View 1 (cartoon, rainbow, N blue to C red):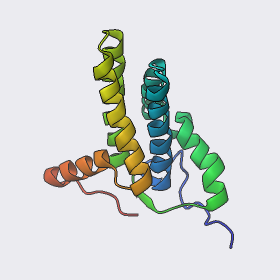
View 2 (cartoon, helix red, strand yellow):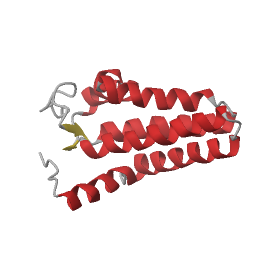
View 3 (cartoon, rainbow, N blue to C red):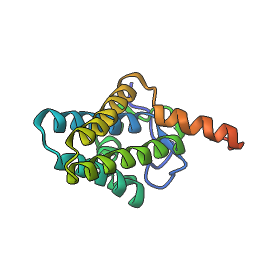
View 4 (cartoon, rainbow, N blue to C red):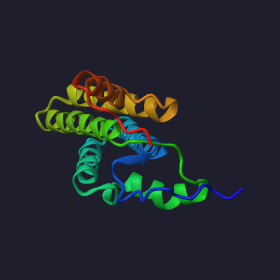
Length: 154
């Protein structure tokens, strides 16, 4: 059976996202944050935060894990279930805050604090990638409900 064709353009239809794209991003960010910790390579934490900022600022085409997903993985396996893109975007903002704070902590000589913040990102990102339960996404969903914001259900 051929892969399911795209029903949305991943770079232009940004209100929704293939649910597997954020999981790919989470797997990459979580794995690399863990590698940074295991190798004590602090600059990688700043690079991961920068990559999230670039993707959030300039779009999915500039998010390297997203680009890899949409250009290498999705064409081979087809489009997955679509979901509202705001919860994973919010989770990425939370990741930026944690990774940015970790980078500042490293610069300030607070290595333990930096690694704690980095490992929180690694743990939550890898948990989301494996289980599909994104804590940042759930926080966004609950806040949206409280504020009366409707999530898209394509």
